[in-house]
Amino acid sequence: MPSKNQDKHEVLKTHFGYTLFRPGQESVIDALLAGRDVLAVMPTGAGKSLCYQLPALMMGGLTLVISPLISLMKDQVEALRDSGIPAAYLNSSLPPADYAETLLLAAGGQYRILYIAPERLQREDLLHITETVKISMIVIDEAHCVSHWGHDFRPGYLTIAAFIRQFPARPVIAAFTATATSSVKEDVALMLDLREPYMLTTGFNRENLYFEVQRPKDKRQDLLRCLENRRDKSGIIYCATRKGVEEICAILNQNGFAATRYHAGLDDRERQENQDDFIYDRKQVMVATNAFGMGIDKSNVSFVIHYNMPKNIESYYQEAGRAGRDGEKADCILLYSPQDVNLNKFFITRAQDEYREKTAALQDSSDFASGEFKDDYINHNLELLKHMTFYAVTTDCLRAYILKYFGEASPHYCGNCSNCTTVFESVDITLPAQKIISCVFRVEQRGRRFGKGMIVNILKGSKSEKLTGPGLETLSTYGIMADTDARRIRLILDQLIAQGYLAVSDGEYPVVCPSPRSGEIIFDKKPVAMMLPKETRKQQSAIFPETPFSDFDAGLLTKLKDLRRRLAKEAHVPAYIIFPDATLQDMCRKRPGSREEFLEVSGVGIVKMKKYGGEFTKLIRQHTGGI
Ligand code: ADP
Ligand code: MG
Ligand code: ZN
Image (cartoon, rainbow, N blue to C red; front, side):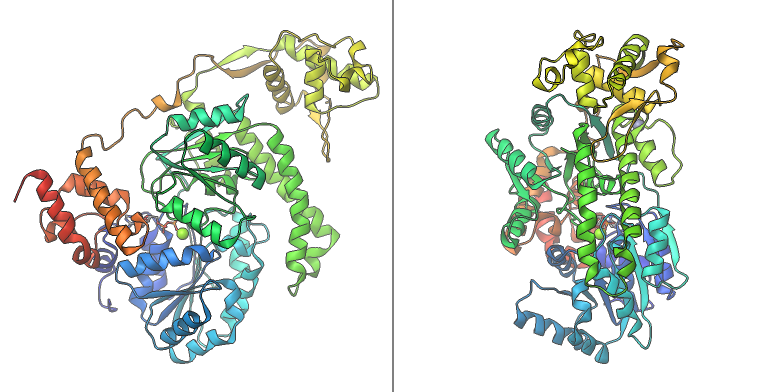
């Protein structure tokens, strides 16, 4: 184990196998080693774990890591142990005998890092450890879970501050999260009772991610088309509901994709099995609700497709960010349909009931349950949903939109999102705008108001009962856009609302109504234009025709992967725990022939060199025809 006088750069190399810190890591580590609290906001894949694992090794004593998802602790602990770092975890998945043994070993000073579920903090047995072992640091991973305003509030997190207060000598506190707007950041610092924390927010930009929004006519067809181009790739498909997950997973399997599923309706065992199938690359596609993925470090996820729009940008960026952790090019695709907005509104109003149930059991929650809080909570979330919806419909750079949302300056053009690579043209929509707005007026004159779908149906001249029943076919605007594609009408209608020429009511069934500016179009005959994609748009798959590593020997990479698969199988761990893809790629580049050279590979530390150096270098020597 390293000692205080071992340099952090040495520890980085010997234990983690890296020569360089990533942006932000070093300053967080320095602050923690100097005994200062930290609140670090770094995007998914930025390398937050190392920010506390490395100082945990250098500080001596024991570091507790509070983490919300118990299914992942095993993985993290395995990865640490595989690098020769003594670590363990305590959560409800452990059989009582193992739990007791872990506690005993922890009390005996056998571990440097102990992962723990928030629910376990109130147990007395945990405090016994602290009688014999010094707790040097307490880490709160996914710290946004403590904030009511965060997108993933967990009541168990509310007990953390009280837990920390029990220590006569306060340990250093380090909080990490991937997504936090400034109000969430403040809330986290307050709720965790951080003392003058060192605050770090690293850039949110993930250059290797390509962002795309599609508004498909038929989502299923579109999804299958997306996957067809990615047959050999690993990816996640997020659906809004359990039912959606079931359906899509079945369709994919019928179409010859190796897909598995994950949602809260499955029992623990099946969830764990399916997650493992995906992580161990036995199944290539994971179809899941947002219950899946937090903290998962599967580095070779090469696409994340959202079959439904999530309820806010925080969730979207966190979920999409699970692609391309290895730094390889990866795609984040949102399949948007306007129904997603209504679905989310439904979730938001329902979620606040659940929220009240969750907090009712906890102290100090009376004000959360009050009517005022309820309204605040809903309005806040509806506001977040609006920002998400704008993302889905904007024609500006998608990356710029996200970065701006998180308060980061960015260029207006990234060249690596569907809006930057789509050729838009300004189209004159004056005439259809007049037709649509007069239709809304005619409906209004009859004392009626309808949702967007009905307005489109009237303009199209639909023969449905819903229209003929109330006699809407007698409206003068009935069928005046019969020749226009319904989707296009809808697109223009949305655009008129976005530009303020029409309004939409709030409430459970939003209806379209005239706005103060409607008159500019139908009375003043003001010309209007909107940006529409040119029909000849570039195929997105053509954007990254070559991989950045096309210069190296694909044959060798395949052999290395085979070896890794065998080693992983023998050790019963996922392949990436042995080495991530990035490390294998670096081997292809450097072709180490000896153990010393092997140590030069990014991701290889002393322990892994000793464990795996022999077999890998032998394979490389054979491949390159040396001795
Ligand atoms: P997150 O910030 O999402 O928690 P992780 O801590 O899981 O990210 O790290 C993501 C990946 O980055 C891991 O595979 C990890 O090994 C790798 N990584 C972390 N720090 C470095 C570094 N300094 N150099 C190279 N790779 C690193
Ligand atoms: Mg993490
Ligand atoms: Zn862009």
